[in-house]
Image (tube, rainbow, N blue to C red; front, side, top):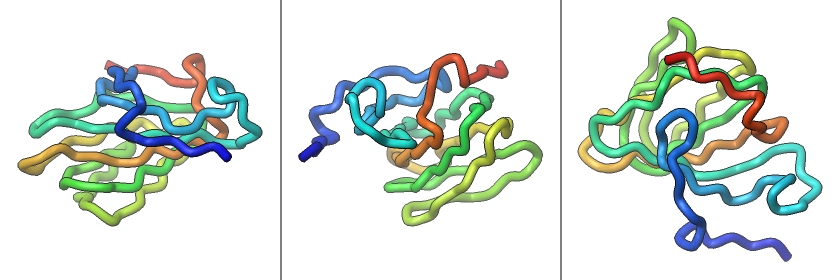
Length: 120
């Protein structure tokens, strides 16, 4: 039974400049999944880099507050909100709160480095 403990997942700086911890990825974990899932964090005042993915992505805000930009649209986000990001959409998110902004990233089909484009 695959079980992951987020506290034991190794953090790294992702291509969008968030601190990322992978939970499940079909390639790296040798699982039959059509998606991947992990947690991203931004410190107070930080903003992810503009980027786009060829995959559809969903953010689920776990803690904190922020502002997401998808193309020309902007919205305030907070814990408990889910944001659907269409494939190929230019995007970034900013932490506007007083503590870490933490959110789950669910990507389908699963993230591949060659499918992500940094725009800054």
